Image (cartoon, rainbow, N blue to C red):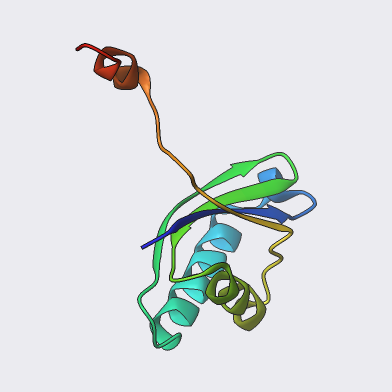
Amino acid sequence: MPTFIIEREVPGADKLSHDDLCALSAKSNAVVADLGVPYTWITSYVAGDKLYCVHEAPSADVVREHAERGGFPANRITEVAAVIGPSTASQGRGK
């Protein structure tokens, strides 16, 4: 299933309380449960005035539907083309 990075502009996101983040998470989980299609919220990062969320979904349209139903912004939705990390260097040609 495709993986997407969702950029959400939320002024003051880094100042949201633990309770605010819990409520936001609960709402997202409820929407995921009601979508009726395979959908996995992998993780989210809160940084400055943004949330960067990693979701697996059948399409960007389904990601948009999740955002609309939950009342979340989805300012940019980008499909992940590849995943790399430190170990990728040792997997280069000839190794």
